[in-house]
Length: 319
Image (tube, rainbow, N blue to C red; front, side):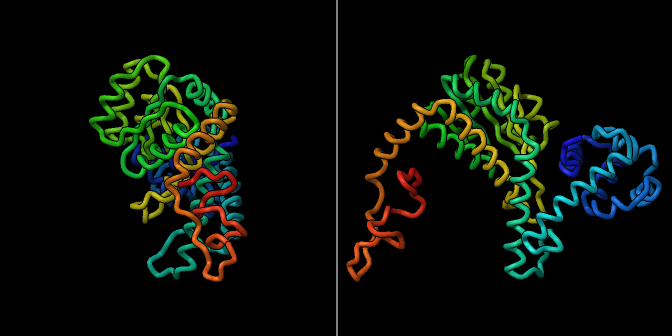
């Protein structure tokens, strides 16, 4: 199997029995230890039978424990390489960590989320979603909490290249918009857990109205996936400090970028003209570059004849 086994374990967790969930948590808590355990030893650690361990492995698509353990070894080896890039021996944030350790651990977790999302992404499904968006008269996006930021980001990107896109973060407006969907339209719901009530409800209403539905979620077997024609899956592992939805948000934004750039490729001529028009429309809202007092004409930290606000590259389109 090519799938990241640790990602598969995390995604399967909500559907597991209580005993299998204990096995999953042992694997997630210390995968390096599991690599050294026989099936008998792992069963003892998990207070489960060997049959439960075998059933757990087969439920993930492996032939048995031996193949599962080899996949865990491969996954932990890849993660160790990434940790070493950030000079870390432990990836979980601890209350006693120094500021340098916190920065390194967050950078590691977010890098891992992006790398795993890219590695495990079903690119054929991605292109099917792109094709639906490019031909859609309208694209609606739904999301709540931190996922609403991802939905708004994609809506802004699509709008800037001439695609009619709306993002309704108010649940009542989202439902009203969903009820007016038509065949050919695309409705995209963003939910890390796949269990967000408002997003699930809006997507179900949009699907009933005839829209093509897309879920962006970390759990491909979740409720939102069942309501969707297409599922795009992130691979984020949240820590104890999940209130900021850090890794999940970064993985979602990366997936949105994959989707947007692919859409832009398919409509390149329209995209470049739309970006030119929208850039010109908002350029009057930018402050002029601040001049240094020595009168040398340099912009604020930029080269000669500075180019305006930070974030604007050549022909920049940032705010």
